[in-house]
Length: 127
Image (cartoon, rainbow, N blue to C red; front, side):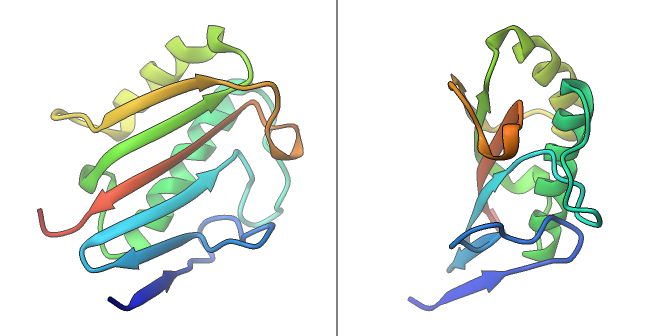
């Protein structure tokens, strides 16, 4: 099966050896997003702003792939402090409606660029 690379200027450019997303058939694998502003490529300040920016970035990549966050079937969230998990749930409710995607939340020691949160996703189109 052919792989299609997804890229959009509405999400931060890749800062390493990866693509923003890769589409194979009807499945789109969205790379991890941290709270980088796509224009300045600087990390937004504070956990609340970073969580919002992460979901805005994922939304932009999902749309560039021809879908939306409603098409996400699996979401992984990485937090440097699990005390912020409640805030993730609150913000996530603004971006996702039932039925919610499957999700994992993982506490990690650190993230790229000193980010406080990162999320990646798997999306299925036309489902």
